[in-house]
Image (cartoon, rainbow, N blue to C red; front, side, top):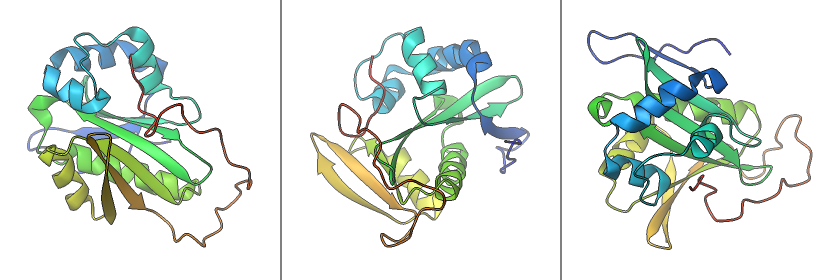
Length: 188
């Protein structure tokens, strides 16, 4: 997929594209620049150092895809997707602390939602901390309609991509295997 060029923070050129294995070292650098709180909000557990296995799973999720946000030579954000079923997709978003509040997470959510719709998914789910105002703002600014429900101390945010009665184009009716835990977030 060609890079997607959303608006960037003033003075910067932001590019979104699919992540791949060549991004591992830059993803590691992104993780090292993030605060423990930001990493906890993404992975829902304390992750002092993100193991290579988890970084690889973030970039190359089983059955899903990732979108990376580049500013110059650096990765400053990553959105990782994983199918929960043939109609539902989980997405986890991480934006480096220094670049939060500039619309990068919002643009990644829009990009993932557009691709998920094109792939025939009907809804996108995100797990977030109840006090994660940045995630709330990103979803609100994205223009995507969402609902929230509490689950195990977190909020499950559901974004409806297509009506429930829509037939996903080119999708078999058989469900994909569900993840081992609700939300499917990669865990260390």
